[in-house]
Structure formats: C-alpha cells, structure tokens
Length: 265
Image 1 (tube, rainbow, N blue to C red):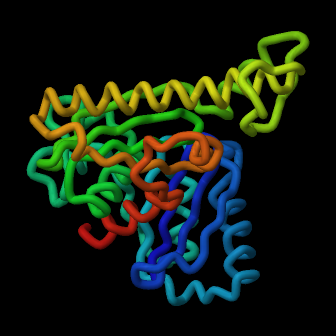
Image 2: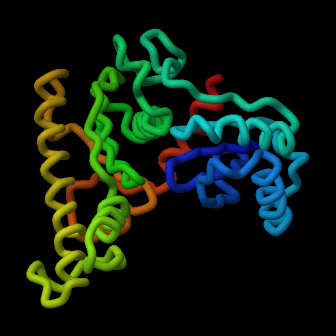
C-alpha cells in the first residue's frame, strides 16, 4: 500500500492507496509548530481507528508547498512506513523527465509540486490539452498542451482566503459560509458577501478558463474546443453547481497524481 501525503497551506491530505484505489483519506490542519512526533501520533491513531495495518505500507511519497513541514512528514513516513519517502521537487518536471508532462526553462524551478501532481493527474484523465482549476488556499489554473508541455497558469486568492481577508480587514463585515445566495443583489450583509465572493468567483473562474483556453490555443496550436477542464480542491463544490465550464470534477486529482508519480519513481 502507498502512503501519500499532500501538504498544503491550510490542510495536509493523507491518502492510503491499495493498488489504484484510495482506501482511506484524512484531512488534517497544516501547522508548522507541530513536530514529526506529534503528527506521527495523530496519524497512527487515525490508522488504528480505520483498522489499517501500517505494516502493509510499502512506500511513502510527499508533495509539499510548505517547506517547514517537509521534515516533520519525512519523520512521519520513516516511523509509519519504515522507509524514507520520495519527496517531489519541482525540477522533477524538467524536460526529458520520466513524467508524461514537463516544463521548459526556468519555470521548472517555480512550479508548485501540488500543481505538478494536478497536471500529471489531468494528463492521465485526458491524454491531451487541459486546464486544472484547483480551489485551495489559492485558486490556481494550470495549463498543459497536447504534447504534455505545462505552459504555466494563473494564481488568485482562494474563496476561503478572500472571505477571511474581508472579515479580518473590516470592522463590521462578518465571516460567512461559502454558499450561493438566492439572488445577486443581497438584502443582508451575509447575502451581499456571498454574492460578491461566490458569484464573483464564478465570473472570475469562467473568464480565466476562457482566456486560458484561447491563450493555450495560440501558444500550442491546440483547438480551443479540444481543451478539457478539470476542477479539484476542497472548495470546488461551491462553484460546481453554478457553472458548466468544467469537463469533470475530481476532488482527489492531486493525490491521484501523487500515486501516478509514485509508480514512476
């Protein structure tokens, strides 16, 4: 079984694969103050409660956009999997690598490893030009052409980040749940914020997807209509019912990409 760890700015997603099937998945808070021993204790408890025999773990792999948490989770893998994990680095996507997708030039040093996992996962779905929309702490779009070249993408504040920033930086605006309002013009502060954030981000995502499709087509020669769009990330469900710009929604795309990379390294 594979022990896969995706460390994000807000949450750490841990997935256990038996073959190609995710048999267990947990989402715990990303906390740079916690030690490897503390995380190990938490995860061992989760494994025990799920009835998982950690002796069956044969391999560990880590993707992280939080450098301070790589060390603690290397310790976690060494304690739980009994092996040093494979830690993904952005340069794994350099031209000529073993991956089905790659970057060219200096950009290969800057791509977040979560976005690399997304690109690998999306390529496995479509084997062609695609855009991954990831609803995380940041809202990211990652664009790959039909030759497997990752051309880059866009980065915006995530929905949760936007709501939190609004509440923290104003005197009278509250935190509100991320739900679609009944109509665009809100009659209450809550509805007005939900309209501005949720419906505003609907417009943002649809506009960015359309522009990225056009730009990717101009760069690569791929037909706009052939470019697929996959949504992932913890908050994709907020916009999923409101737009038809996604070809498919796969909330597990990142960890599935991790699994595919683990099979190659």
